[in-house]
Image (cartoon, rainbow, N blue to C red; front, side, top):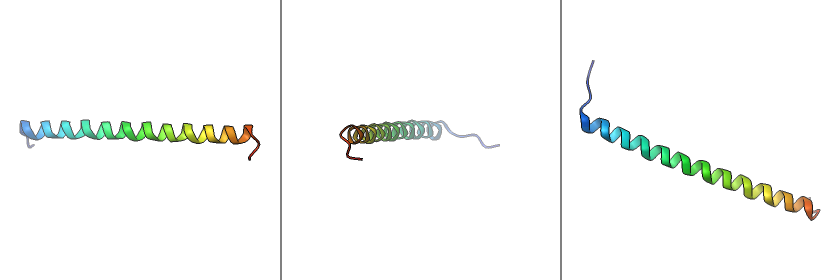
Length: 50
């Protein structure tokens, strides 16, 4: 079994942390888009455009 050296492990942790931050941003943007689409659809129903 091979052991990893410390700097390699540290860079792996930094990569995972950055990937998690990007993943969170994508989720926030997707939720925002869903909310905007829902609001547009509700206003369309309210003003009888649909």
